[in-house]
Length: 440
Image 1 (cartoon, rainbow, N blue to C red):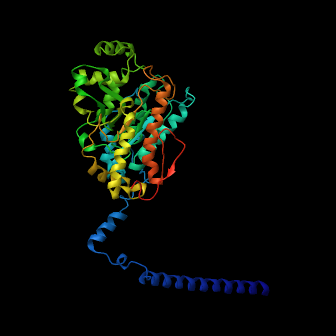
Image 2: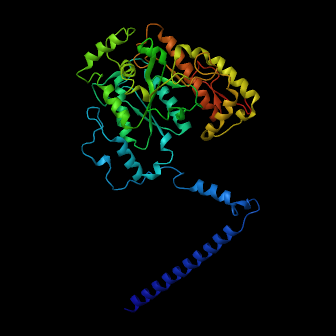
Image 3: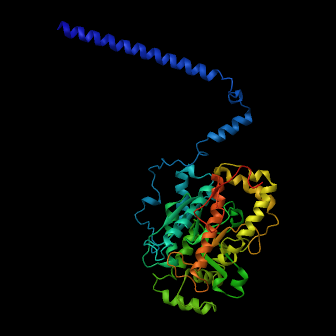
């Protein structure tokens, strides 16, 4: 018993000793932390401790939780459209009151509201099986990297799909199920930006002029005169488009999809489109002709909300673009030689801040064909990088060289931020370190 009491007493004293020592250490740490905070080192900036009202306001903005980003860990238990068992992501079942459902979701997730009006999700995709072309998968990877680079620079999200969400909606029709699913999966996003897998961003600084499209729900490249006067199915290009995440767009896709291969009206629409557009040599119903038909025949219902962009290369035909890269490169280098602000090294995160400086020197460059401004998107229509079944108008070698040149032209704009560049646009594997103050 005595030993037990002794052991208990010793243990108690030992514990008390640790508690006393621990309390002393904590007290010392508090005093040290307080002293460190109140005193500044010889190299410290004392203005950090005393800020003006303007500085306080700026600091508050900087540390505001909403401005720091989305609250990804907050999803309240309140029911939303996701809890509706009748909700379907498929093309077969329409969605109604989508604007109301999106609005309700945003109200329940307020951290996503700031900036929602200009938020963009890029969507692209390719087939689920390996490419028939031996270098096809490599090319698709490079095209994908190009899109990822552009999205990273401008803070956009990207969704790349490589499965047929509707097995009967193959080829160019496969984009529609992916776009609808993306709209439902991303109610925080205002715009879905479809970009074909064979389209490359070749001006990494340019951003979509969203203010121009504020009264529209759909944007694509084309020529209205060619559409309404000549009724050509090539008057628009449906390989790159911007579509607003709203009920109007859901209704448009529902109507548009009725022309697709999953529809019992598919053959009928093939005949209608072939008859409507005299320059359409094949009778198959395709997405581009279908959209052109809706613009032409149902303009009041759809056309007034569709912006046919012809003011710049929203997407541009590669044949008329690739040959201009060398001249464009020389013109841009000449500008950099005379403009020190553009030669300054900077973090990739702040690349957008230099776009306005470039614009000061590009006022006379023009846009589109015959311009010496970097083309926004170079689209390799007809090259078929995955299958290799290119248009017989040009050879596979021509397509490959052109794609390589475009991708390296774009890659130079990215690698420059990392201190390297390709010396030869036809040499994808070799780079050189960019010297300080280049190219002066």
